[in-house]
Structures are given as C-alpha cells and as structure tokens.
Image 1 (cartoon, rainbow, N blue to C red):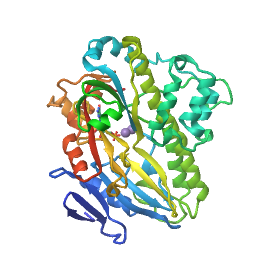
Image 2 (cartoon, rainbow, N blue to C red; image 1 turned 90 degrees about the horizontal axis):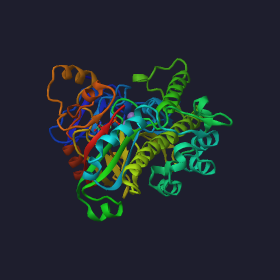
Image 3 (spheres, rainbow, N blue to C red; image 1 turned 180 degrees about the vertical axis):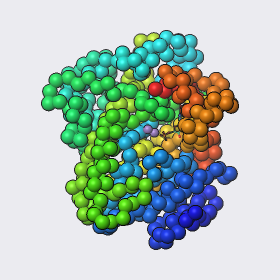
Image 4 (cartoon, rainbow, N blue to C red; image 1 turned 180 degrees about the horizontal axis):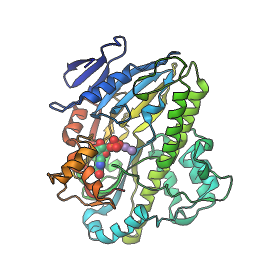
Length: 465
Ligand code: 5GP
Ligand code: MN
Ligand code: MN
C-alpha cells in the first residue's frame, strides 16, 4: 500500500510512491525470511524525512534482525542524515548496548556453584543489596567526559564496593569500550538529583538491568571458529562468558523525552508534521538545538557505558568470592542505539536504531535469545550497512502475542532455559520462540562480507529484571 518494493537477491529496496525523489531504504534479509509490511513502511518513511529549512535523510539501510519498532522506526535501521538530527529516531533507550567478558573458568566449575551464585546475584541485581555510592565529582566527571572522567574521581575517593574493585584493570579496559566510553556531555542535561554540587549520590538506577529483554547472561563458549583472534581476545572453548544487554536507564529516559518534546515544539510553524512524530532538528535553522541534543545524548550515553561496566563489576566481585582471583577481562562494549557524528567535510550523522557498529577489526557482539546461541564476531567495515551489523536475531512475535500464546501453553522453546527473574511473565514474553532463528541471521551477514564469526556461545543462565 503506497509502497514501491524491489527485490535484488537478499536486498529489498523500498520507497514511498508519493515521494519519488526520496532515497530508497534497503534491508538485507536471509532467504525465506518473513518480511513485515509495517517495518518496510517505516523504513521507506524514514528515507523520505526532510526538514523544511533544508537537510534530510541521505541513506537508510537495515540489518537482518529488522522488525517493526513501536516508536515509528524499524528496529535494525541505520540512517545517515545530512544537516539534521532526529532525536525520536534514537528515542529514550539511549546507548542501549552489549558488553562481553570472558572468564578464565571452565563452565562445569561455575555450574557446581550455581545456586549460591544465583542467590547472590539476585541480591545484586534485583534487591538493591549493592553498595555503590558515588561522589558528586564522580557523577560530574562521568556525565562530562565518560568513563575516564568517572574513574579519575573514583581513584581520588573510592566508596562502597568500588573500594574492592581493581581500578587499574578498569582503566586498562577502557580502550575496549567503543569510543573509549567517552562522549562530550554536560551534567546540565542529567536529572538534577544525580548531579549535586557536592556530597554523595545514591542512585538506585545505576547498575540495574532494566526491563524488557535487557539481560545479564552467563554463557559457555561452545565453539571457537577463528583461533588466532580468539586467542588474542582471551576467548577459550569450554570457558565461561558474560554477556550484558542494558542501556542508560533513567538518564536516557530523561534526555530522550526532553528532546522529543523540544524537537516537536521547535518544528517550523505552519509546516506539515513529519510522519510518526519523527521531528528533526535542522543545522541550518537551529544549530544550537542540534549541538544541544548531541551533548544531551552524549551525557546519557556516558551513563549507559558506566551502567554496563558496573553490572559486570558486580558479577566479577561475586566470581572472586566464589572462585578466588579468577580473571574475567572485557572483550568489548558497544552501543546499538545512538546517533554519532561522521567525520568529513559535510555535516552528517549516523543513527543506529538496534544495529551494532561493525568497523574493520572491531569486535561485534550478536546475541540470539536465552535459548539459542549468541556470537562474537569481527567486523569488516563494509559500507553495505554503513559499517554496521545486526544487534541480535530480531523479534519475531510481539510481547502481547507471546503472552496470549503462553496461556495456550504452546512450545515456547523454554526447555533447558535457566531464566532468573522476579516476573513470571518475562519468561514467556522473552521466550526463545519470540525471536527469529539466529543461524540464518549470522550466515547471511557473513556471506555479505559484513563480519566473520570468532566464537559461538550458549546460555547457561539469564537474569532478566
Ligand atoms: P533489542 O536491543 O532490540 O531490545 O534486542 C537485542 C537482541 O537481543 C534481540 O534481537 C534478541 O536476538 C536478543 N535477545 C533477547 N533476549 C535475549 C536473551 O535473554 N539472551 C540472549 N543471549 N539474547 C537475547
Ligand atoms: Mn534497550
Ligand atoms: Mn538493546
């Protein structure tokens, strides 16, 4: 309906019929994969976005975990804009991302202590027994300059559980965080109670997983495919891995909602509204607003990097209690929901809405589900998806529909899954059957030259809030 669709091998090209000069949106999909009309419409609509004062979307691509988004943008979209930024395309889940550690511990040893580990981690993740006070200085440093700014303040005054952390190791690991976990932010964009002038901040949102399909998952490395690279990244078959999926929690909500409203109120008077509430900010017309949004988004993103770091640090401390000085180095941490500037003579930005950066030689983390394999890959910097890959398998069935199926006790793929949650409905909404098969999603990206598999992991236990 109103859509022009062309198929070229595994690539679908879509265009709105009534905006013929708009660039086509392109999505890469495995053979025989279902493609949802709603997601195609969202992709074509995104490609046609323009600001009345000039600037617009230049290129739109989508990764194979493509599915409709509930905020007007299909999940898996990768958008290059010229002269505009679109706060609503990122939304409130700013710097949602993935983090992967490997643990120098055979899976059987960890499983022998499963119950005590689960009890302690339930306390850390669900019952706020963690003790992570922050100095006002640490919060300011974080929001302004990211992980290193935070760490320098923590070194001056380590509090609570961070007094037990190996701060040298945290510092060494910063270069395995995408962009060094450091974007140019400003504390003025953070919620006020997190940035007092002095004193100690007790932030109940920091180091929490968040709802939905966010998770902390303990996995075993099932197979190493690229031996040389796995060795270099400390990845060994049979050993434990930790995968973390979370974002910037309340700070992203605060920033995302503020700028969604601002972009709407700044839209030029008398001009037709963009579809799906995708109001953009124009560099030509509102340069301060563009700079303000980018700084606010960076502020929230910095918090997202720390949130994942601390979720991992809590787990590392529990592993040390149970197994002694076991090494658990970071492999990589990266955002899959963020707008970043592109270097070059023209003012351009890339927004990834549920897509993983996949630069050449860079680690790429693609989870499947709590009942399927997850993958560690290496990127190839292919321009096909603007230096990106998928950030998962992609949802196949909505939460609502899963709830309905759950009541009819269909096979949800939950056999053998160890999901630790306080909400029974999570197990059903996020069941393996809610996701597309990860195998073809990975194979199709390898065949397209986007990335190569380094190792495959299998879940042992998954924590979901
Ligand atoms: P999103 O960022 O769009 O919310 O989801 C990212 C991806 O995570 C999903 O497409 C899905 O493939 C994957 N996923 C969802 N739940 C789980 C889980 O419990 N464990 C693992 N390993 N992956 C999951
Ligand atoms: Mn998220
Ligand atoms: Mn996510």
